[in-house]
Image 1 (cartoon, helix red, strand yellow):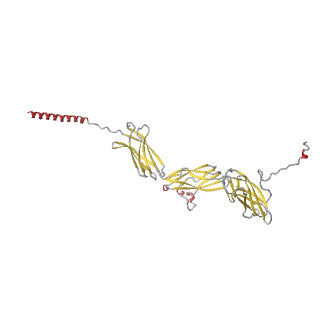
Image 2: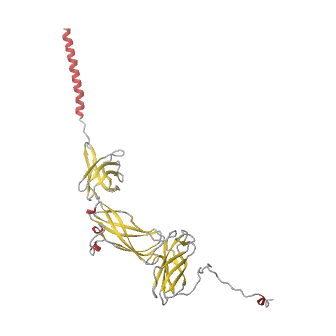
Image 3: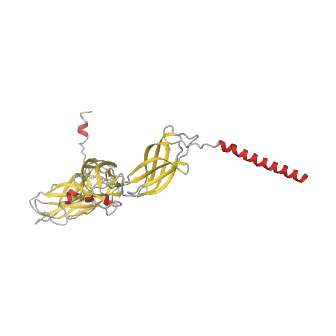
Length: 422
């Protein structure tokens, strides 16, 4: 039976029709057109795209490798499920070339594509069909090319200062956060602070006031920044006193390689508000007696260039001191002008005389109404008040005077009564 089967059954053959998995939906023939590259973007500008983007340009680049010029170039694009024509569902993704292509030259076609929001960021296969005609030849030739393309995701760069306030008349340690809020990675990120004093030597004008400050670092090699992540750069900035209550704008030039591997350069600006300097010192802390009350006194000096407002001074005990905590309002502490304070001394329990360790705290607000504390530790000496000595002799004289007055009165009464009797 096994020997008879080949004589009864004919040979069978199979062929994958158009639309099969991994196959082109178009008929294939050889031609004079060679596929070079397919990507999202225009001919001279690749772009990053995200799932859900609509009417996105998709460019396919070809080379005319034949010996003759070609004309009448038309293209049709076949992409996987999730990619559709910008003309609407069910429409063909087509494009025309605007000009002829010389022999040995390149040409391109740009298609408009909608991307479904459920598409993943990865590489996909595609097929392109090109119809064209040779110069001085009748008929239409067709070329088919399979290729791969990538949904790259989109990189979004944001910069901000972790602390947007600088203080004049001092060096400030600045931390700037570089964040990639997009879905595509950034590679080899390099950042330069532009329009600085060094750069102004070769430029005629400034776009910001950054040339008025001193930035010790102006170039940072950040490296790679993954999607939804951040990197940080630090700098030391000295701000002169004349920029008090001004806004400092530091322009940054950011270079990086995008998901296509192309070098990109963008500009960002980091803004800072410059506060004045409030630098307090306390002098001549001691104890004086005023109207039979001992008081803690001292002077506060502001050696900065901005007034402190809404100021309070608080005295607190330290160690085994039993001085009560008390607060005095002293209002504004002006620059270069001593502000005195005097706080009456009170005790928890019996007064203890001698040395006391205390902490003096000045609470105030600056120009942006941030509350700041300045503390000063001191040792004061509380004197025991002098005892008032009573005059005991005077206490004895008073009864004697009263007794003498009473005696004189009695004697006069007796004399008067005797005279009346006689």
